[in-house]
Length: 449
Image (cartoon, rainbow, N blue to C red; front, side, top):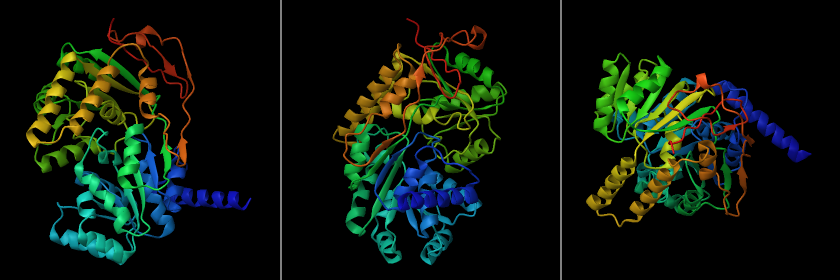
């Protein structure tokens, strides 16, 4: 009974903080378990789909515990957006990054040293510097959250060598606890995260990856411009993101859409930082309806009403596809995800992937993993299976580790008749399957046999 009372009190305290700072009256699946792991300082791996509320899981514990925690983040824009949002809600947070002026950096360092800051966002490179580790020791900080934790794994879709340096945390910081967060981690990636970070008997929290409100359509690509216009005609004045493989493709398509009267702009890593920031801000504040982008766009975008995601070509992994389509319908309403694909896409990606190691002199281990992921995406584009079920099975395989494991139970599945023909575009095949709850029609289009 005492344990039950303690759990009820903790839950009430969590909800009070969430209500006071963010205005939410309830928690999403597995958020409470993740917050408890942070409060009890137990290592954890938290895998929740895009829009599943991962950030709340590491934002609540330091408030309740009255401490300062470190968050490792890979992108300056992502750090800045999160800190700006937290400060706007009255949450004391700061970040340290290379784009700051000397004055800004000094202000942030003083704020952190004061002990009043609950969250400090840093890059993995900065975290492992001697100066910062000494600061961590002086302030008694020993809880670390690693965002986009899949970046540490060769088996992941976005491997970043600098993340491997985080292995020193357990060695350099006595009693350190680490919480790894990601939206896209298969079983091998989860295992690698645990090994690389040296996590001890971690709590494994793996959410349900099905998004019943998303309509997945896979259509053979014939004429990109016409097909994109056709999809957008169903979403006039609504937010949409279009992903292309190359920077040149984003520029050309954005130009054509703007000429058609759409509020559209392109976004890719080759643009000046100021231009990228303006585009991101314009989209976030609804001054832009459409962004045509490479994979560089989307992380940290806080816009819940994206009604359409279009892939003008096949992504290079199921992980990228899941993450990018996950930016649609975060408000829970129906949204459409259209993938225009061609056999040539896999060949183009293979050429680009092989060029990277050849130019950098890498040993090929990362290339092998990337090609394996590409092959998984190619198989996903093959006809014959429900896309919802395929994505859920791809990510949510049960872990073989002995640690505490918890998975959100799968949604019930049953076949239903297709919706009225008038509601299905002419180029879409009949519905293959739908998921039962919530009752949203989910049409799955297959490549014509």
